[in-house]
Length: 408
Image (cartoon, rainbow, N blue to C red; front, side):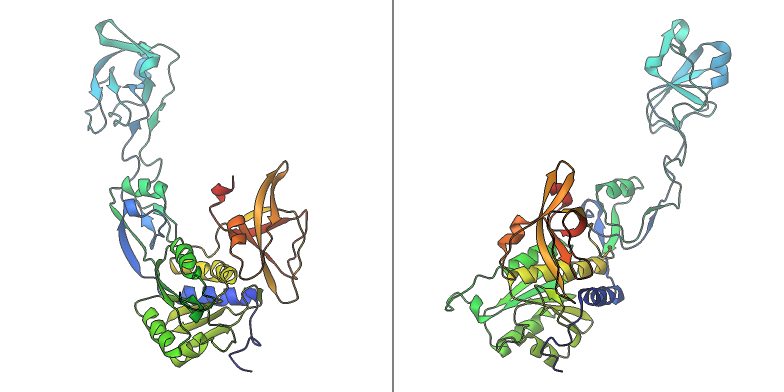
C-alpha cells in the first residue's frame, strides 16, 4: 500500500496517543521569567517555600496582646507600649498588656489578643475587656500555619496565574522557572492563495492557526506560499524547520496533483508517524517527525484545519510545556442525537444554551469541512463515534472553543 493514500490511516484514539507520546518524549527547554509575566506559563519545576508563613506568631487584628491568665486574674492590665508590623518586640512584662497592630509579632509572654473595639481603656492607662474575655490563643496567627519552610508551593506542571504570583512573591522571589514557549511555524500553501490567481482564495488558515496556537502558549511565526511549485514550497518548508520546535502546514496533504507536502517532507528525511486519521472532517491529517521536531500536516479546508489543530496540535503543545494534555472540557445535556460511521469519529460544532434544568448542547448547522462561520456560532466541539454516539437527553462532554466563563 502506498504512503500517499489513506488505506493505513489510524483511528482518533491511536492518533492522539501517538501525538502525546511524541510530546512526552521531547525535552522541555526551560526559561526564567519575572513573576509579573508568569501568568499562563507552566512551572518547569516544583517550587518550595524558603521560609514559614507566617514567619512568626502574629496578631490577626488591631487590638491588645496580653497573658490570658493575668487578665483573668486581675480584670484589667496597664499598657506598656505598642508593637507594629515589622517590629521585633521586647518581651511583655508580667501583668501588662501591649497595643498591637495587625500583622505585628506577638511579644513573648502574651498568648491572647482582643480587638481594640472589644476593650476599654481607663484611668492609669489600664485596659480591660468590654465584652467577655477571649480564650487563650484567640486572634493569633501562629508561625507556619499556612505552610512551613520546604513545603511545596507550586508543583511542576502547574499553570501559573495571579494566585501563584502572590504566593511566590511572598517568599521574596522575583522570577520563576517555566517551560519555554514552543516555537511554532505555521505554513500555508497553494496557488489559490495568490492575489492574482483565477478564483483566488483569502488565506484564513494562517491567521486562524497563529491565533489559536498562540493562545496555547506557543511563539508562532507564519509563512504563506502562494504557489504549487515544488521547489518553492520545499525552500519555504526547509526555512520553516529552522529554529522551530513544531511545524504546522495547512493544505497540500491530500492525494491531488498539487498536494506536495508529503513528498517534500519525505525527501527532507522526515519519518511518517501516521498518515491520515479516521475523523470527519480532517481525514488527511498527517504527522511526521523531522530531526526530533513534530510536523503536523493539516488539511487546507478551514473547518477541517481548525478541528485537527484543536484535537491534536493544541494537546501536543500543552504537553510540550508540561501542562495536562486535556483542556477542561465542558458538559451539558445534548438536544440532539448523532451517530458516526463505523471506525470514524465525527466532530460536531455545538452551542450551549442555559435552560431551566441546566446547560444544553445545541447542534450548529455546518456546510462541512470548509465552513468557518459555524465555529463563530459555536461554543464547543463534540466528538461522536460508533462507540460513543450522542443521544438526546443524555449528558455529553465537549472541547470548549473559548473560555468556559464566557458561556455565561
